[in-house]
Image (cartoon, rainbow, N blue to C red; front, side, top):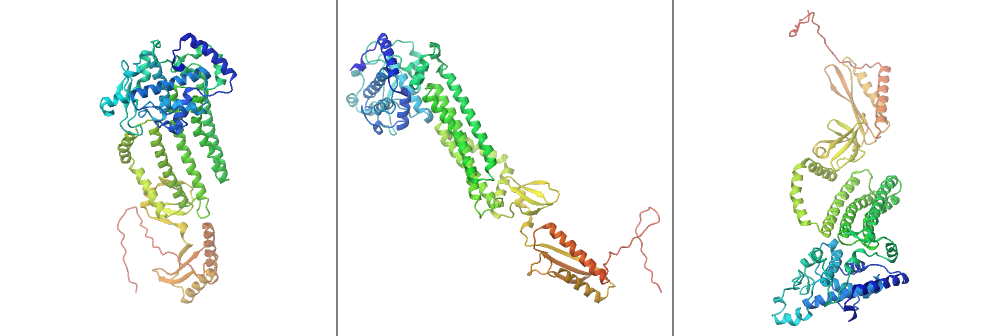
Length: 600
C-alpha cells in the first residue's frame, strides 16, 4: 500500500513544496486537521461510534489490541496523505469525517473533562502517532488478535495489552457505551504529552510501519485557512517557532481577539444599562429588546473561543486554557442573562391591568422571580462546573457545611427574609399606603427582601424598618380606612339654661347636616352625653369620605368657625377649665393645708 511506504526527509521537502503550489491554485480550502477532529467529535460526542456519519472506509475495528492499533495507524497515515496532497482539508467532505472518527474511536477519553475532551483527544492522537513513529512497533503477528485472545481463554483473560518497550497500554473497557472494546487506556491518553517530551529527541524509524514526519508540528503551527496560510508564509522563521506552547505569530492574534472581546462585552453591558434605564418606564417592548445586549455579551467569549480555534488554530494547553476561561466567563454572563430576562418577564406580568405596579402583588412577583433566578443560576453553575471538570460534588458538600455556618451567622437576615414572606402572604399594607408603626407615621415607599421603607408624613424622613420587626409589630393601616373620622367634645358652663343646651345641639347638627364629603349611610352624630364636674359635655362625631388629608383639616376648621359663630349669635358660652392656684408667701416647700370654714 503506497500510503504505508517509508517517506524519506528529502522526498518529504520536495513534495511539501509541490503542495504549497497546489494550495495557491486550488479553490478555498479550510480547516486544519484538528478542526476536522473537532468537528467530527462534536458531531458524534465523545466515545460514540462512527455509524452516525457516512462510512466511507468503515468504522474503527476495536475487537482486539491488534485491530485497535492497526485502525489507529491506518487512519493517521490516511490523514497524513491528505495533508501532503492538499494541505487544507474540506471539513464538509464525509470522507474526512470518517477517517478522523476512526482515529478518535480508538482512544478512551472517558476520564477527560467534557470542556477539553475534544481538544485533548485530537492532541493525544497526534502525540501517539509521533511516539509510534519513533519507537519500534512489534510485528503484527506478535500483537494479540481475536484468535490469540480466544487461545488464552477469552477476553476476560486478556484485560489489557502493553506495547513492548513502551508505556502505551490498550485495555478492554469494562463498562459504559464502549464496553468490551479494546481502546488506548485513559491513563495512556492522559500521559502521552509528557511521554513524547521524553522521546522527542529520537529520530523517526526507518523500518516497519510507515511514519508521518512532522505531523505534530503541523498540528500546532498550521493556519486555519488559505488566506492565513499566505500571510504566515511571508513571516520569518522565528515567528513560526513554538514559544510557551503556542506558535509565536499566534500570540499577538490571540491578544487582539481577547482585547476585542473584552471591549465588546463592556460596550454591550454599558448600552444595556443606558437603554434599559431609558425604556423601563416608557416602552415595555423596547425594554424587553434590550435583553439582546447581555445575550450578545454572553456569546462574545464563545465567539472568541471559535475564532481562536478556527482562524488562529490555537492548540494544546493554550487552547485548553482559552476554552476554560471563555466558557467560565460565558457561564458567568449567563447568570446576568437569567436575572435580566427575569426582570423583563416581571415587567410584562406586572403590566397587566389587574396588578398595581407598586402594589404588594407586584412586590411578591419580583421576589419570586429573584428566587427563581437564583435557583436557575445555581443549576447552571452545577452543570457548567461539571462540564469544566470542577469537583461539583465536593463543592456541594462544602456548600452544605458552609451553608450551615452562614445560616448561623446570618440569623437576622433569615428572620427578615421570613418576615418578608409573611408580609407578602398576609398583605397588611401595600406600597403607597399610609401606616402607623410604633411612633412612625408615614407612607410605604418600598417593600424589600430585608426591610420596608416608610416616608414620614410631615417631616419627609425615610425610615427603614426590618421586615422581621414589621411582621411582629401592630400596624395601623390608615390607607385602608373607609373615611377620615373626627370626634370632639364641646363643653358649656354648668349655669347654662337647658334651652340653650338644646339650642347648642341643634346648631351643631345644622352645621354638620349634608356636609362636604358626607356618606348618607354615616350621618354625623351630636349628643349631650355627659355631666362633667365643671361643664355640660356635647360630643360630636362625623366621617369625611374624601381621602385628601389637608382638605379634611380645612373642613374641620370650617366647622369650628361655624359653631363658634352660631354660639356667639345665640349667646352660648364655651366652658373654661376650672383651676385653683395657691401661692405661698415664702420659698419653703411644705404640705398644703386647706381649712374649710363654714360661713354663717
